[in-house]
Length: 59
Ligand SMILES: [Zn+2]
Image (tube, rainbow, N blue to C red; front, side):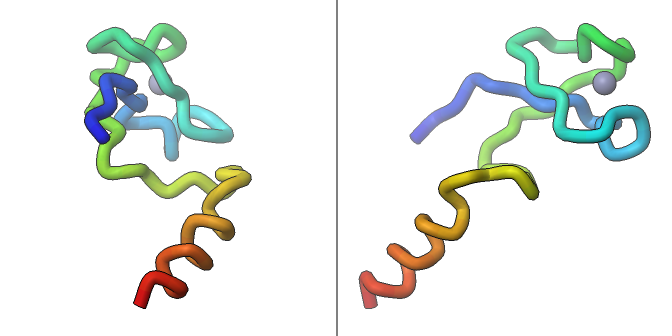
């Protein structure tokens, strides 16, 4: 699925967690954003575990 959501390219240095935005620059720190697809590492992704479990089951 295509995603238009972008993520701050410098969030690891400047924010506690991924800073998502629809604009080309981070509204918080002004760093350029990058396309978030494929999904970036997200320690708080509540569905990550579920998705990985599903993936295992499809084989
Ligand atoms: Zn930022």
